[in-house]
Image (tube, rainbow, N blue to C red; front, side, top):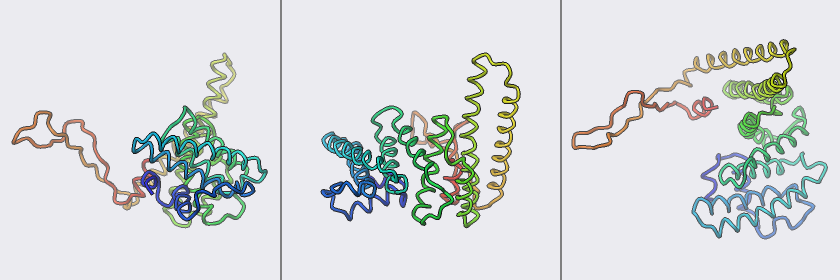
Length: 286
């Protein structure tokens, strides 16, 4: 399917697209009693239609996709009225799909952040200490990057900063590579809380409050602690030979080519970082 080239292979939206290929499109959403279980399929159907239309510049297909998008929102709103809706992974995937759609084909300002805020609220209703299936655990892992990016962008604390969520991910980190990755996510989650503390402090200082010395010290100390944790993490990461990378200069061709001209590395030119593994590259980009 065309849309799969724009998303992570094996991720929740990719898996939903694969599931969609084995379903009868025309019967999606007929049984409202199953709204929680099928909302993700209608979401990925409209998502894939919109993305295809946008990437191929076909306005008629885009319009068709947004018609399906409207039906998706109606079904999702019905599903969200059910008291146990947060327990369904399909609902989580539905909202994730809407958020990714806003990343690839934005339809309004801050809609991506709004979807992610709704997703955080649903996850906050879950108990990460409860047993979960391998598929649910995989879903949680795939969401970490999106959740923390949204939280830091919106300057709000992420649910992933809660001790029980951190502990759950660490508990299921069976190899050193997974544990090191989770340690970095934990640091970023702490940063989301720190941003809120900083903003609250600045607001009080701007209002003329002069008795915030202890609060200033607390924010400074927590900042130093997080920086120390990040430095320690990076030192451990650098010590692993599997994470080694080389800097390759980006060669720039002369503006006026001639028969003897060659691409040269200009002073101050940027460098490409070449890693031995894709995992190391992705982790450093966090």
